[in-house]
Amino acid sequence: DIRDYALVDEDFKIILKSFPKSAHPMGILSSLTSALIAFNPSSVDINSEKDFYEAIIILLAKFPVLASWTHRKMKGLPLNYPNYDLSYTDNLAYMIYKMPNKDFKASTTLVSALNKLLILHADHEQNCSTSTVRMVGSSHAGLFPSIASGISALWGPLHGGANQAVIEMLEEIKADGGDVPADGEPQRRVFAEDDVVERGADEGAEGEDDGQHHLCALLRAISQRASLEFQH
Image (tube, rainbow, N blue to C red; front, side, top):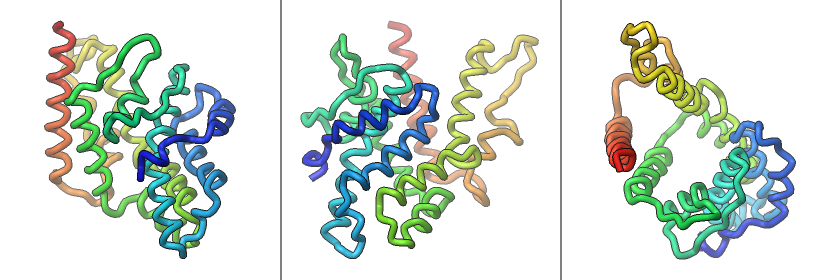
């Protein structure tokens, strides 16, 4: 069912084109997700089990396309379409990373990591963005605007925006030559008590959960893969 709905209306490109490349990806993705309602008006009726199921399938099918188009818009790259010969996660990697002048095959490490990350995020229980989706959905607004509101909530610096802050911090550390700043004083900024990692954690959470252990294992696998590719 998902593959049958994977194609995105070409008019979405008009919406995408209206954003400057400097626009924040979460703002673009929220707008594109909300726009799904205009192209699928029948999915508004949440009292229809058939329509609501169709809305879920439409979202699962088109969201990877919209996410990849948002990424490539920021990079100034041509947009890729879904490849029906690939699995769901393989297809996401293909649409994000495929360059027009070369073949692309996602590494099994990357695809495995993406699969596990999607599962871990789906099992995120009740937090800021999931609560926002439920609140908007309680008005019978429909699935697409409800999910769009959750994306906007995830944009916040005290929620998903903390992930962006961590990436920016890691880039700064890399630019400084690693974990040791220019003056030679060891400094573990990523794990500072008052820094973005703690701010990005779920409120009230203590210690580690199983998800954190899985994420650490994924990070090690990806790091080892990157190290091998760099050496060759």
